[in-house]
Amino acid sequence: MRSSALLVVQALFSVFTVITAQRNAKDKPRNVLLILADDGGFEIGAYGNKICQTPNLDALAKNSLIFNKAFTSVSSCSPSRSALLTGMPSHQNGMYGLHQAENHFDSFSDITSLPKILKEHGIRTGIIGKKHVGPESVYPFDFAVTEENNSILQVGRNITHIKLLAREFLNNATEPFFLYIAFHDPHRCGHTNPEFGEFCQHFGNGDTGMGLIPDWQPIYYQPDEIQLPYYIPDTWAAREDVAAQYTTVSRLDQGVGLILQELKDSRHSDDTLVIYSSDNGIPFPNGRTNLYDSGIAEPMFISSPLHKERRGQVTNSLTSLLDIVPTLLDWYDIKHEDFSKTNLVESRALTGKSLLPLLIKEPDDTSSEAVFASHNLHEVTMYYPMRMIRTHRYKLIHNINYNSPFPIDQDFYLSPTFQDILNRTKNNQNTFWFKTLKEYYKRPEWELFDLKHDPEELNNIVKKNSSREIFEELKVKLLKWQNDTNDPWICSPHAVFENKGLFKLNPQCLDLDNVW
Image 1 (cartoon, rainbow, N blue to C red):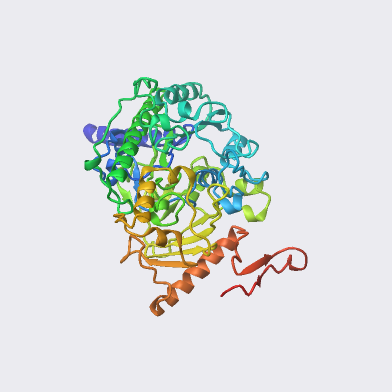
Image 2 (spheres, rainbow, N blue to C red; image 1 turned 30 degrees about the vertical axis):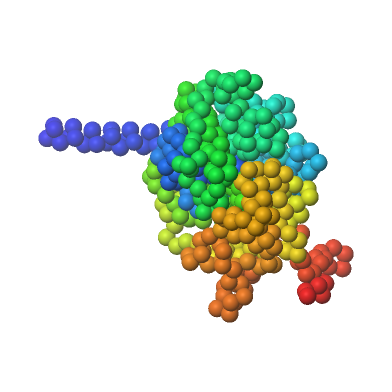
């Protein structure tokens, strides 16, 4: 009898211990560490790359839910970062193109961004690395060490310096925090700092004139061993280009490892949600600035101390970087209504969703899932607005400025890969690419792809009779999203959008009769 009573007491004590532990975990301050690569892709072991060495990202992946179908809403640096920090596509938040220098794009001054709303709720915010958005009044951080007040090479690529800055922030965290670490690796630098190599792969390696990053152990790759994705031509120039990129991906990986160690040393590993992703596609042909999957698909890991059910598992649910803001509001228990109240304009509502439920279980039905994208400009001269909807099976792209050739940005133009394609094309030589430059430049107004049978997006089926129904269905859904997000381009290019004066209560697209 006495032993039975003892077993009951032990059982009750075990249940009490579990409940207490769960309650203590929930009662702890909730923090977030958001790590962003710059033009990063899937050169990661966790995504099947067997050559590029990324042990720290692989370790994070094992402790995370791995997203197989995560996408940016725009394949351009500043617009993507503004969408990441506002939960709104660039046409909705106003960051139509790059922020820096002569490009000079800013978000609307009445936008309430994530750092702003977090600060209002008593959460300390910090950014280390590449900010690339403005104005300051819209994107204020309590702790900010960025290209605006430091060398971007030091705060974005010097992983020792980044580690020490993270330590300073974490060791002084006396309240819930949001720390955003935006690496500059593996962005190209041949356009701005050619002395350090095409990807700044020599910066900090200890060679004469290169400086030294104490914590970095450079890894160099052989071009003939590179694992090329389908959209990069198989030429020696491209292989050397990717080999240089791999070196900076490995530097990024070592930096991630240092940051995660700082998180552990500051005793915040068990109360911090960790998210890793990238802003847009890699800077290669068909990549960055494109709305093909090669330009918008992103790596993403989410590791939660409170959600261990699916660690090391994979989700195939369609996910957008527009979901990050709703996810963090959910994590901090800030209601969407609170966020909406600060964005007084009705057209500033969020269209994303929280990703926390995915950390517990996969949705039973994903058939209605869709992600959207909106691109306007990259550099100020690169006017090529596009809109996109992607489901699990199909993708529809609307090329609004389709009568113009697809534009090429400055640093990509100078890249060895593009110069090789250009020179081979001029000399009527084989480019070893999966499309021609003419096909790349000249695009029709509408592109529709069946991703099940055409994952490389080469066969435009928009004019097929059998595609008419899905084409119209996707157009309706895309138009609804444009309307929900107050897209100024909603009537372009064949009509003018009128929504003021006589049309205030009944906005309309007025025909231009310009379809020839």
